[in-house]
Image 1 (tube, rainbow, N blue to C red):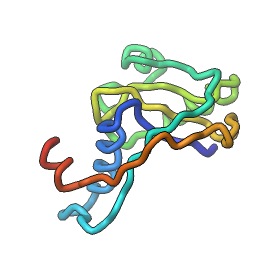
Image 2 (cartoon, helix red, strand yellow):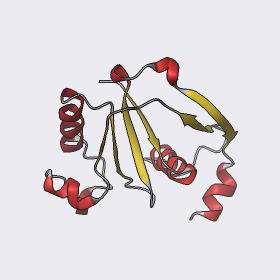
Image 3 (cartoon, rainbow, N blue to C red):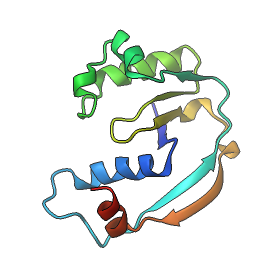
Length: 130
């Protein structure tokens, strides 16, 4: 299933990117350029699992939620898609915000609009958030 994975806050999205770019590297890749986008999306039936207690009740180990253990969360996403949801809102494992996971097969992709974009200043962001 194809998904668009985002965050409800700018820093939440950047924190997620920072985590994945930093994995397995002794030096952060400083020459790479990335942008962060603010979008409007026409999602109409989104499953909200707003806190860890709800995920825990569905079998997610909250003590390991920050790890890359996707099996259970992918099963939850597949079930939500099967039940007709167009996405999910879940707690972020990297930042104090909600993440947004949208099921692309359930959306009208023409309704996705870019509101704004900006280049990420990795050096500044990492300095302010380390």
